[in-house]
Image (tube, rainbow, N blue to C red; front, side, top):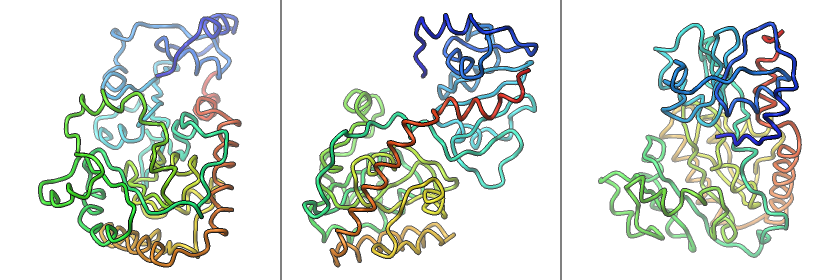
Length: 326
């Protein structure tokens, strides 16, 4: 949730009142400032948009009684509730949803690109790293498929693997995990909730991370991809097909031909997961081209720093709706 300073409140009061009626809760002042308009603050518990805001922490602003939602997981919220969304509600997306309706505006720019801490110094060179990592918290179909097909990768040491949401049929993998799975959300939050964006030991020690993204049905870039980029790791992504292509369009580089990325073109989910894990196995067996790969991971970290130093997440959101405020 956006933290609002006294300076932001004073700034908002200095803007002219727009001819459109602009309203929002207290945390929406930051977006109103990017829109260069004065916003009327309304209590959270008296406005209907909070049906979505309170469930997943979405932020919102209204323009002439049309509500615009934004913030973390806004596209996931749209996907979950698209059949009950009204005509006067629009979701400023943080993901690209294939064939989404008019109430969702797709975008590759999630807030995770800006909130991921990036080390100021270079991480350990790939030549001094070994092994792979894959950490998964919540249960999902594509993550269950990773668990189903990951067994051959345990021939490669060292490795850091954990799946907190693991299904009973994959319990044989628990002995392979570097820590016991944590099933309880409150226990997980108490242990990792305040530090889950921090880079861990495996980000500094592993050559490659298997990234189990937040969704396999849309392009949704989360902290799961931002972490290996910040840590200057190579990676494969278990997500929506075409994920790597989208990353390249955003200015990042991927690892073909040094890592087989043909999985990115495969539309069948289980086949894509199997191809992805096979590519990891082949890469770890070969252990070649680390100098060439170092140039790529260096580029990706610089690109992430450029994104964070440039247009902010709220500026991206404001650009989408600014034309509606006169």
